[in-house]
Length: 111
Image (cartoon, rainbow, N blue to C red; front, side, top):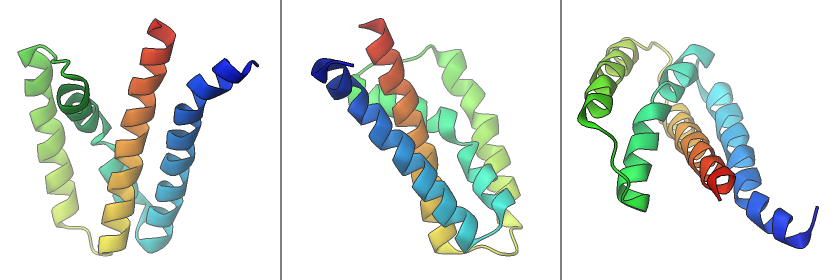
């Protein structure tokens, strides 16, 4: 690997590590199922990061397909018996960093 390759991949490595660390923190602070419910919001975060951070907008049907995801996550989270804020924030950070990693990986592959 050249220094330039390492530079290109370092952001992805950071987001991969952050995804893992936040996921482990969320697992330790609450129910594992709750963390997985939160990680299901990754497509929503991907769309939001693309729109806000990169000014790349997806077709309307894609955004409409995210509504059931948000509804399902909200419905599943309402009855969570072992809810903790730490688990919520860490699980959300895990989903956001995972979405960021996926977007940056695509950007690197596309050139």
